[in-house]
View 1 (cartoon, helix red, strand yellow):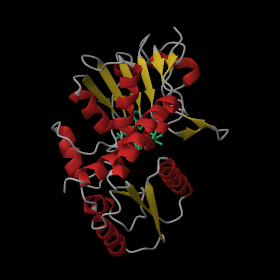
View 2 (spheres, rainbow, N blue to C red):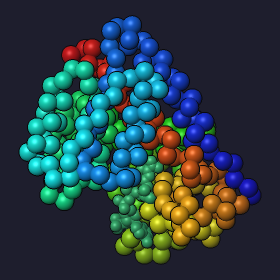
View 3 (spheres, rainbow, N blue to C red):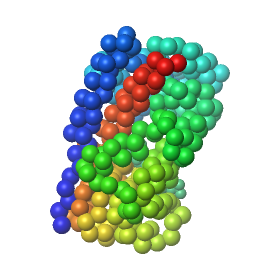
View 4 (cartoon, protein in one colour):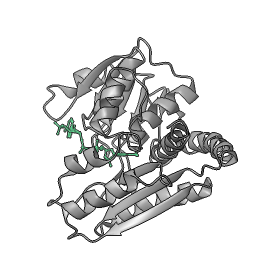
Length: 284
Ligand code: NDP
């Protein structure tokens, strides 16, 4: 079987058109959605991510602000900036690019962002809301994966979803979103025994591991839906996912490529969350 490709770039473009319309509607009410991004230090990958997020905001006619702080900034000063932004009505979303330098407590930073402006969906209040199926901000990568499946016409209800990876930003929340939509969920991680036993039973297999080409054809059930979250570089420096695309695409029913799979959806859902925050600010 040769897998159908789930084209994240195309689905993201379609979603961004919808978000652009939401931005126009808000502008008619004199609200320009705004995202403030705080970048600490000089990590090259973080800088690229932040630049892409800002560019995406500008393309949709949203305001974006970049606050750059030196690597040695104190935790107190960083928290102070967040508190200022919490009170600034021009910015509806606040994002602190992770990872942070070791002397700064990431947990404190996330918890200082107002849950009403937490467009990354990392604040415990938003995570808790997601757990019990209440409205809030959903973490962007898992949210984007749910939209990819929905737009491809793949229902998760009753399916066995196996997720390899249990990070707080991808694996764990994704499993909860799947469960909320009535999937049967299995989580796997570095301590899982006989990983293949689990992955080969998946109707929908998610790879969020961070190891290049980790999932091979023998790990996958014939006709399964395979979602590759990984963003890695192989030995020759080329971008690749956690799934061995060449092999697995000959066995799966659907597959996301890397690049142009999950990646474009993450920023798209960040834009969506910022517009949602702006639109909810009207009622406060
Ligand atoms: P983390 O490093 O936080 O988590 C990796 C997970 O994989 C952990 O749960 C770990 O298990 C598990 N793992 C590691 N080795 C194995 C193994 N041998 N067998 C089974 N499980 C294993 O990564 P993230 O969740 O942050 O990211 C995962 C990947 O997704 C990365 O490549 C990252 O770059 C990419 N990513 C892509 C995004 C996008 O927009 N497309 C967004 C975010 C991330 P344990 O918990 O036991 O340590």
